[in-house]
Length: 218
Image (cartoon, rainbow, N blue to C red; front, side, top):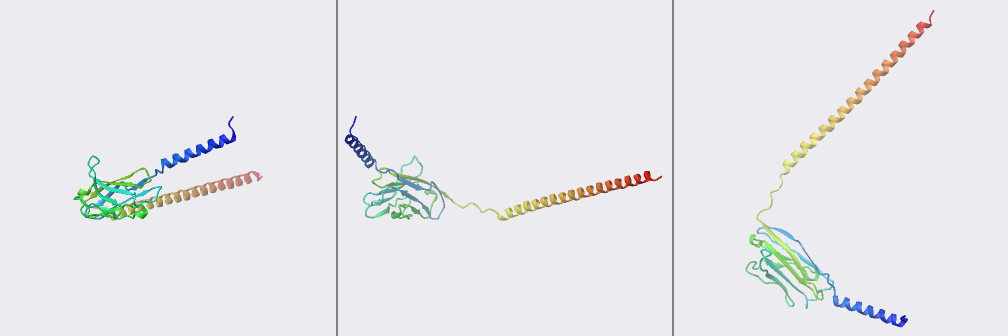
């Protein structure tokens, strides 16, 4: 049978081991938040958002991130923006984008968003947002599919919608009115039948009374 001192020693050892495991495992709750699909109108400026959450406050001496582009998942990724310790977010100006990409986020708020100006059809593709924020041990990765349309869908013709709504509303009102009229006519007819039955009943009673008086006379 173990003594109280041995039990306390064993408990301390278990606690120390648990704390050691926690310190080695670190925090691994890196999450990158993006819009999975973005539609942009050709020739306009579009914002491509990317933010992240981490257990640790950003340390600019250890933080790293990259924006890359690829036409499809099978193509090689092309880096077009990265983070430098002394310069911050720096666009690399590849031939595809030139100076059309700018940083639009806020590092203090874990916002790594960018804007792409004068969007072209050949900008369609996959945009990757990679984030690493030590001592987080996991590298975050957000994937955005950008689609470019040449024109906005035509506006819906509200006149037709109003006309259809008016027609349906008018038909519904007419149906309700017809139902009310039919109900009133049925009620009126029912009252007439009750009155007629009552009058017939009173007539029978009166005739029976006269006949009874006739039989009583000598």
